[in-house]
Length: 87
Image (cartoon, helix red, strand yellow):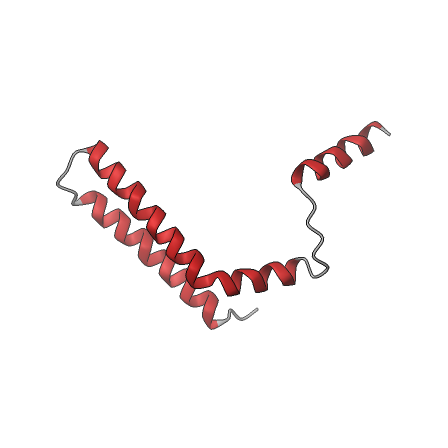
């Protein structure tokens, strides 16, 4: 199955992010605790930017996976599964 250009861009971005984080950690001139705090802040910023950038694509994927809009919580699924085992 061929990947769409959006998917390719997404994977390339994630790969670039991972490479950047790895290189940054290897060459970081600060202590571990400071580096972790800085990294945590940066990851939060990147994830927020990612959500903003790809919110339309995420909604499209959700629509494809659940076309009827039936959102069943995990707990309800587990409860139904447990009831079916006892029945």
